[in-house]
Image (cartoon, rainbow over the protein chains, first blue to last red):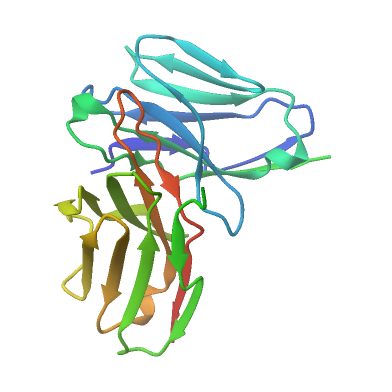
Length: 114
Length: 115
C-alpha cells in the first residue's frame, strides 16, 4: 500500500528555472508534510516542512504549496542553481497519525544545468 | 553536536556472513529509526524505537534481520545470514518528539555490499 505518491521520478532544468515536485497522500490523519534533500553519499536532511493549517510556506528559494482538499503538496525551487542538484523526498507523518514515524515518497532526482 | 554517527561507513562481506551495523543517535533524542535505501525500492523504514523500545518493526524484511537498542546512546542492526539482495545503503536517524517538531536527523549511512 503506497501511502504517498511522488512525481516526477527525475527532473532536468536549466539554471534559473523553477522545478516543481509533487506529492499526493491518502490518509487524512497525516498533519506534518516535510521535504528532505539528499546529496550523493549523504543522508537525507530536512529542507522545509508545512502543517495543514496553512496553504503555503516559503523559506528562501524553497516554497511548499499545500492543497488539503486535494490531499496534495508540492515543492517549488525558485531561481534554481546547480548546487540544488540532489534527490528530493516528500514525507508524511504527524501526531494525528499517532506515531513518530514518517512515510517517505520514492524520491525525485533533480539536475540543474548551468 | 556530532550528529548521528554510523559505523562502519562501508562494509563488504560474503554471502552467509553475519553483518552488524551500528548507530549512535544524537544525545537527548528519544526516537531512533533504521532505513534501507536502494534504487529499486527507495527509502524504506525497517524499524523504529521510542525510548529504547521497538515500536514498529513491520518493515523488517525477514527473520534474518534483527535490531536492538540496549540504551539511549546505541543501536545495532544485524543481518544473519547476509544475502546479495541485502546490498543497500542503511541509514540510521534520530529525532526528539518536542511539541510540533518531527524532524529526523539522518546519519551518513553504511553502504553494505554482499557478494
